[in-house]
Length: 326
Ligand code: ATP
Ligand code: MG
Image (cartoon, rainbow, N blue to C red; front, side, top):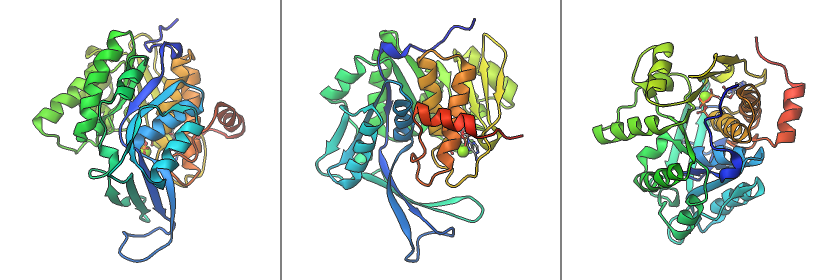
């Protein structure tokens, strides 16, 4: 029997801290936004928000810390999270700044052009409020995105939250979410390394594994991460599926579901939200991987970053009706 390294669901909600955005998507493939063109949106978005939405939707206890403006883009997000069972008590409404946004257009080669309004929007104005404190003091798990390290206000809240949650027996998961090439300044690099060493569960994708370990080669990176204290690693490989590693037992590889990709954004976050919720609800890794893979695959079949996040029933229907790749 493997021991579950994550605090159980009934120990308190999984909390995610970070940017809440709307996404507006160009419906035509092409380059950039220099010409008037058809757009569709607003869709609720922001990697941490996608993660926690899927976590709540599948039935995990879930809560979000972030900020939106007092506008319809903010309401789109808060309403969606609420609908999907996420505790929104610690989302603040900024009286001055608008909700963050991202315009995205896909190029024919699959790369993307963006116009962002995040750093100077409500999304980046997270703070340690009474509501945040109350929530953290009853939380069982914290999920951190490496990308949050670029938001000073989020870093501050995460630093305080980690200590409190760990001291009450809660656990931490980290999605490194930092491209291999990305050079961080010395202080941020140390923060990143510190974040990795605090993780009970790590959810890297592709080369982020080696980036997080600071070591080349998959096996060596896994070994290094276990030495650092990480207990469970799930490596996401896009359409090639995912692999589970634990210091206690054999690795498990799962193929992806065979779907037609419409919009790849949010796959990793939906995978992670579903996997984490399932593990905290007591499922063994094999089963949590199946739900995670289904959540990631289902989400890429729909346009919009969290439109395909599935309830437990929706994912079970998906699992029983969609085949696996190769
Ligand atoms: P993101 O692009 O959101 O940052 P990521 O790179 O963190 O995502 P991926 O590996 O792309 O994560 O996707 C996570 C999981 O979702 C995969 O392990 C896989 O199970 C599923 N998935 C992603 N893309 C596809 C696809 N095209 N077809 C089937 N399943 C997919
Ligand atoms: Mg991906």
